[in-house]
Length: 218
Image (cartoon, rainbow, N blue to C red; front, side, top):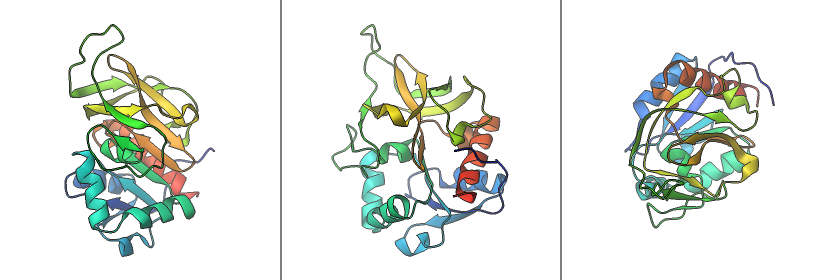
């Protein structure tokens, strides 16, 4: 799937977990020409052309907030049934998996695999957490999310957990931090980044433009 990166006022529903980076994600959506819409209740999803699950905080807090606001089923309906593109960022991507070591609640299950904590590297040495700072993303296969972004470009990471046992067919990019872990995924119109594109300057802005272009051409 190849899309142009120009967008015209795509309505982007940004789920506000009350614990995350809603403001910075919203600002980036505006910067690339989209129209951000804060969502805390199911009725606010109705007209969305794209959905973003931002992420700062703990797994159970994010999943719990969605459940308290009745968003879990409506989100699945809009994304899995209606085909609305979604981008999960950091915790937002982890929530789309089946489960996490960080919490007791089940994830959304849109992606196979679990979320685990960094422990040891390939030599058995303890990995320092959290992983903070700029790191390269190595492309594994083409994706419209990374179109026009150079292989090995650096993005900004802040996390202690990562996706494990991911479906290789959904693996778009990997990053090395003691070990290789999934940093970009795609399954149909479900996209996820372990890094924070809203904090990743030029390449992060390009990634947002690409995501909104997918929504515009959906």
